[in-house]
Length: 209
Image 1 (cartoon, rainbow, N blue to C red):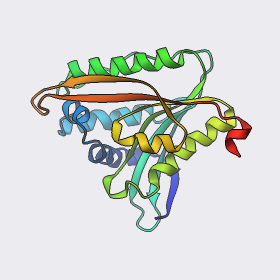
Image 2: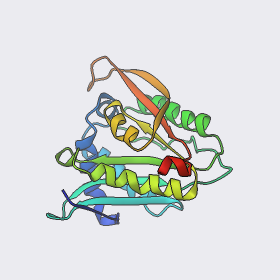
Image 3: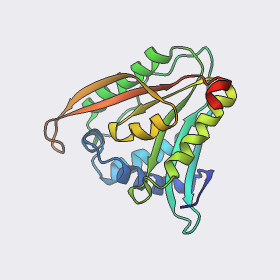
Image 4: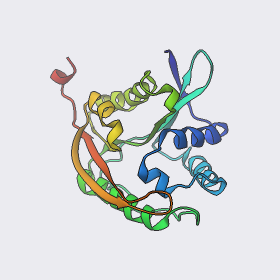
């Protein structure tokens, strides 16, 4: 299926949130983010606030036949000598704030501890609508960042839910660490959730041949 990669625009934010919620049906996402209007508004505002950040590369994969938004991504370009930011936003009241603090806080610290101040490309967010998963949209968006990492001769980093690991391994990412969290609230009944932290090493000329 043919896809094209286009810059994300402010008008895309509502559809991106719909894609995100459809794509992420794992226990962590369901527990953190009840699918209610206030949470949608939070996510839309976050995308709009971060869309024009320095070093942020937002893009969307579009179905060339239908024009439908199949997925979207946010890669961050390297910033040598600066550790990843571990500050957290203020969560909306409708979210599970305790779980968001626990998990997103721990994940941010893992990013900092694993990568330190080494400049690297960071895949902060990628989502593909279930209708398009396994059809090439995700690979198109992965290639965007990995090609730039190769061009810049830097590492790349991402956090992974278990069901996405195979895609990331295809592009040279390898597990560096993992964290398990027991999740239980009114939306999720007692389940362990694993988050993986993956690094793609600097690729040498021989790696690319």
